[in-house]
Image 1: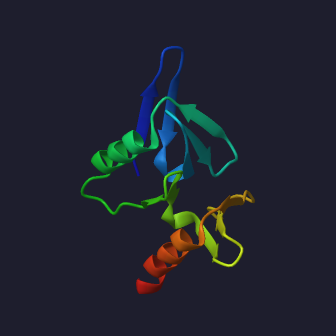
Image 2 (image 1 turned 180 degrees about the vertical axis):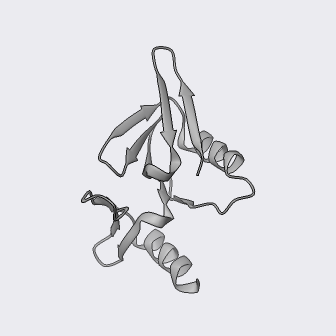
Length: 118
């Protein structure tokens, strides 16, 4: 998988996409959560990042899925979808880190359908 470079005023952030569990929107910023527990923040909106991911991964199987307005998740890391509890659990299975996101029932139902069809 590819690497993205974010050159900001005072720092450079190198993001290896295969280590990303999910991206979370925070206004004009996006927080990036990695499998090893690290977190980085970039000055990119989630919409702008989604476009960048589509361009970068064009021609290859896209592992990232937009979930509502707030998240882009790495579909490879989906462990559990619990519609009743509004819970999505992500992990990469290489580390002991587990990430639990609170997601609407409708969004989780749509996500579950994607996995059920495959």
